[in-house]
Length: 277
Ligand code: PXL
Image 1 (spheres, rainbow, N blue to C red):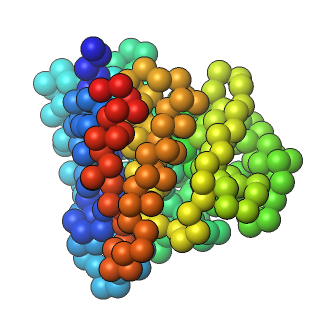
Image 2: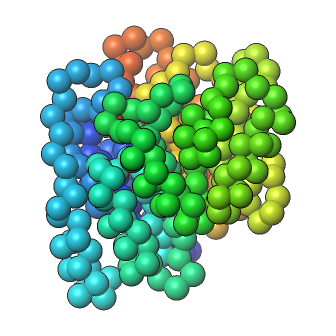
């Protein structure tokens, strides 16, 4: 059984079921040794709570990475999510080039926008910096909004296959290799992901649960990375991640008090079964 060591870099939202509080348990359930580098500590996530506290950890990152280098620590994969600042992106690029084993994988979820808009903490300078990180990665997992910010293409809520192909072409032209474009739906009640890997594009369609849920992008990306590192192809990893995320959303539906995230924990045994663990 492989036992890869992965580093995930994203914020700790202490309450809200997103970023590291989602990635760490999901990657651990996938059987990976999971090391973390918190980009910031927030009292809650920023999507719906007000008055949250933020401590940006940009200053701490170079020292942490230097210590790891001194200890001879390296990783089979580095997976990034929500980052604390534009300055951090340079540090993350440095980590990609100095702390990854030969042949190691980089996976970037350019977590910065949804529904046509940037998250409150980000501006167009951050988008520019994110482009340089995303287009250097082995895999990126943008939603349609993030793909538009990364390429400059117009954001549309009504679209066809030609528009999605144009988005993938534009991402590829800028350097993207593996792409998992999330939230692509062509029919009522259905959504899905388009996976580009090894020069091939394939679509996986699944149920769409009407109400959008916070944190599902992080659940999805973490499950994708877990399955990929367990040896599944990018398409199969994307399919498993989609099936798991749908289960989590269904399990949370109907509980109005749980608006801030999805109840992903009780579904972890099913995720592990999907991975054959
Ligand atoms: O789920 C993405 C995410 C992660 N971290 C923080 C966020 C968000 C989305 O809004 O606010 C702090």
